[in-house]
Structure formats: C-alpha cells, structure tokens
Amino acid sequence: MQSPLVSADRLIVAVDVDTLSAARTLVQSLASQVRWFKIGFELFTREGPAAAQLVKDAGANLFLDLKFHDIPNTVRGGVKSALAHGADLLTLHASGGAAMLRAARDAADEAGRSDAILVGVTVLTHLSESDFNTLFDSKRKLEDTVIALAKAARAGGMNGVVASARELPAIKRAIARDFIVVTPGIRLAGAGKDDQTRVVTPDQAIRDGADYIVVGRPITAAKDPAAACDEVLRCMDDALTA
Ligand code: C5P
Image (cartoon, rainbow, N blue to C red; front, side):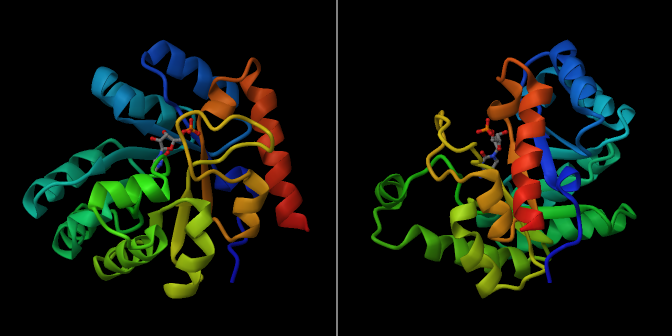
C-alpha cells in the first residue's frame, strides 16, 4: 500500500553546502515548506554536530547521510554516534554485507532508537550502466545488482534502500511495497543532470512508488530556492493526486 504521507513529508532537501552559515540560511528559508533535511559528509566533516543541530533546531527531521561502510564493530560505534546527534535517517552501504548492516540495526536498538530509519545504499546514481560494467569488469545488469543489494539490506534489518527511481519499481516488486526506497538523482523536466546519470522527475519518482525523494542542486543552486522547492512539491502533488 502506498504510504499516506503528503509531499512535504516525502521531500528531503540535501544541504550540500560547506559552511554552517550557508546551511542555516538554506534550512531557515525552507523549514516552513519541508520536514526533512539531509546533512552529508561535506558539511558534517567541516562543521560537525552543529550542522546536525541546526536541522533539529528548525524542528525538522534529520537525514545524516554519512554512508557508513566498514567492519561491523566500527559501524556499530558510528551508528551510535550518529544517533546521538538526533539522526532520524541514516545511510550505510549495502555492499558492506548483512553482518555490517545487522550491527547497525543492533546499535540503533541498543540506543533505544528502533524508530530510526536505516537504509542501505545500493548503486550510486551517478554511475551509468557502462560505468558499472567497467568498474566490476562484468556484464551483469546494474538493476540485478541493485536488487541483490536490496535483498542484502532487507536481510541485514534495514528499513529500505537508497536507489535511483529507475530501479524503484523492480525493488518494490522484488522485496515488498512497504520496503522504503529513498531516491536521489531527481531533476525537473528539461533540467541538466549535473554529475548524475540515472535521473528522473519528481512526479515520475512518486508515481513509481518512491517513499522519499532527495533533491539537492535543483533547489539549493536555484536563484530562489523556496520557489524551486515549491515547484518540486507541486510536481510531487500532481503525482500524488492523479
Ligand atoms: O544535487 P543533487 O540533487 O544531485 O544531490 C543528490 C544528493 O543525494 C547528494 O547529496 C548525494 O550525496 C545524494 N545521493 C546520491 N546518490 C546516492 C545516494 C545519495 O546522489 N545513491
């Protein structure tokens, strides 16, 4: 069953800026429109917990996108530390395998944060099918690998995965409708792709069943981020009400 969340609950704005003051300006200007902000390692590595705190101070949900990928014991500690900053959604590379993912889930449960959404990153959205084949010296279809990683994520106790919306319907078919899919690589119709490859529009992602969409530059690099954010929300609403 499709989640009943409205568009503002499903849009995650990626705060991909390198200073706390730029982050604060962006978060404050969009906080009345969206309920989720994503802090990635560019800002977190420079500014640390203050970056996470400004999202919490704005009353929004915090997606701390640190994409953990290490041995289980190290990931367990990393997840505990991330949750101490109030993270509501965390990413781990699904290719770390079931034991690593299970250690993350256990860490969340031990921290009393069973509510935290943990998602496995499948294949990054900037990689094309041919990049992928070259990288792994393989003719295997990218989508088959995404599905295998989604299954590993499920087995490791993840709530869902991060994947391109292009693989979204296949993931929902192979795993379950309620297995959360977070989709970056979103572009408004007719816009440039930047460094992304496997892009889709916000309305298409929602139509295909995306639970959350992650949007960075189409909003953050716009002349008027609030207006761009409105446009993304309008596209999502079109799909949700169709
Ligand atoms: O600017 P743009 O909308 O392309 O930003 C996408 C965001 O989603 C970035 O913060 C990037 O780190 C993140 N992301 C991604 N692909 C993944 C996982 C996360 O683009 N597979």
